[in-house]
Length: 88
Image 1 (cartoon, rainbow, N blue to C red):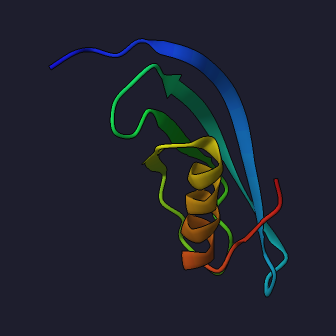
Image 2 (image 1 turned 90 degrees about the vertical axis):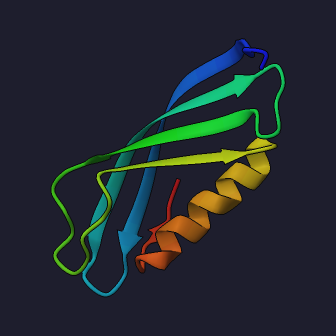
């Protein structure tokens, strides 16, 4: 199995808010784009405490997709699963 090279890597911050409690959620992320494979775009998310009062967010989460736009669509769906609105 070939090993693909990382052609782009950046640090990202994902922010969201829980509307009912007005609590903020923050994830420190590493976005990587590889030069091949089924899902060459990945986002490794690490939660930054404190946890919101009303929901217990996962400490880490990995999303892999075939494009950056579809990856951020999955980020929005992931946050919505916990009642969090994406803010950037």
